[in-house]
Amino acid sequence: MGFDLPLFYLFAAVAVAASLLVIGQRSPIYSVMLLIASFVALAGLYVLLDAPFVAVIQIIIYAGAILVLFLFVVMLLNAPKESGGPWQRLAAGPRRLGAALGAVFAVELVWALWRVAALREPVAPAGMLPAEAIEPVRSIGQVLYTDYAFAFEVTSLLILVAMVGAVVLAKRHV
Amino acid sequence: MVSLNHYLALSAILFAIGTTGVFLRRNMITVLLSIEIMLNAANLMLVAFGRHFGAVDGQIIVFFVVTVAAAEAAVGLAIVIALFRLRESLDPDAFTSLKW
Image (cartoon, rainbow over all chains, first blue to last red; front, top):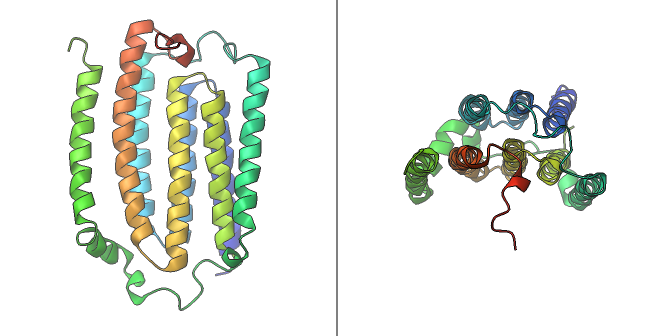
């Protein structure tokens, strides 16, 4: 229990630093690599939250499939740097305004969430979890294939549509 | 002790980083990556709330978010490839034909 806080700060620092570097990079390849580091740190946070299923799909689907797809496209297009030099298309004024808006947005969100006093207690105090949470993957499967069965089937249709759409869009002559 | 607010604050910071990326970057691939950061911030909040209330529904919604993110990445990258073929550029400012 005592390792929770240092581990949380370690993973959070890695996730925030890697995400900041993702949007600070000019080279898309480095951005994708740093985003993988950020997602691995987030998977660590999911383990701390007793959600090993989410941690595993984070690694397998996000880092393993989605970001590899991004990597393929970056290498396929062979456009390593933003065209026209660093920050050239965006003048200094809009750039500062965008950064200031982002900072204001962050402060606003953190303030709004932090001032809810009821949420200041530890995550899931002892005894609050139902017994089936000890076997998280089994309970996830049970709820997923009963309560959420229709949404699950619709998801398969969504993936089919996305697959066909991606092929049609990327084809040279439709 | 890690409180729920810790996770909510981290999620808010990550979401703001993603938003700033969409504001600032002039590269469509990096903009899509920023959208992935924002989706992950939302996922973190869903899992934290699910843990707090002792329900698995948060994790199930995360599963759906991940599948939607995969579909979005596939279609979005196909559009990026088609646009790059058209203009030889990844700069969103190069595609202004529909701009009034």
